[in-house]
Image 1 (cartoon, protein in one colour):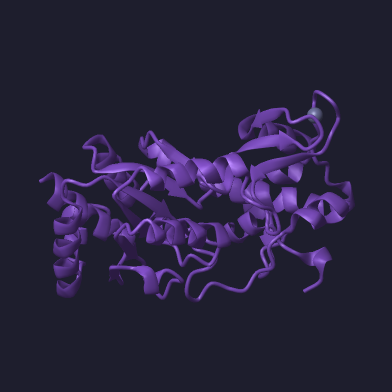
Image 2 (cartoon, rainbow, N blue to C red):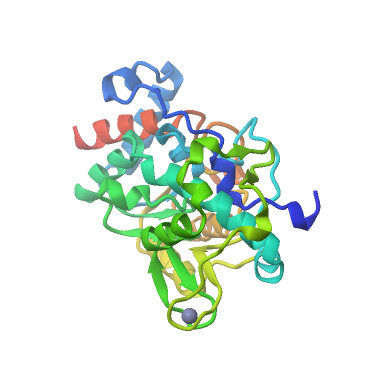
Length: 307
Ligand SMILES: [Zn+2]
């Protein structure tokens, strides 16, 4: 795939619009947990009792909210938008905004799931110190988590690359729809298998610019090839330093910042618990690896620690 046809990473979410029909009650999910997972949760609960853990979450936590995991097993291969391409190529930028707008609408409709809610309960009870997330969907905050570090930013905010002015995504979305009537009827838009949105002649597509200085706007998310802002990484780092354990939930830790935080926990000799379906880069550092869904496992853990 050439850089010109690169897809932004948040547009890959567009073609999985099916709302999750997964069971979403603790009772239904508890029965879904295999016996060996039950024993593993018992062991983890014993380990964590009286401690305060930091939690690092990834895309696997949001799949039960109907947001697909683009790195998960069976996900189609996509080429993520790079910062360099976004800034340098106007047509790519237009395609990005078209696809990103549709992706954002999916995020906007998604609701926090039992996994997010279980983390809120654990935080309220003092069992976790806060959540570091690689997700850009804002669902931890919407669920009610108080201490959330968004490593990769949030699709809910847009920033000007020239003057730094921040905008809410709602206002930018309204401008996009006003300037590009095709977006008002998303059902009519074809999504290509590579995640690109077919919005007609891309040259006619209008992307919003900064109302303060006329500069280029960009969703406030970390693109492929961009680094996590230092301030954000330090905040995540401080959360781990102040905790007694680290729980990784729903991340394969393919991203460098994630594995660096896990490595930091290992150096501090914190017990590390990994909850993820499939192999992760942190498995070798984990005291407990739970090969299970995050919603049911976190709910089971909360039930044991808070019950
Ligand atoms: Zn500006």
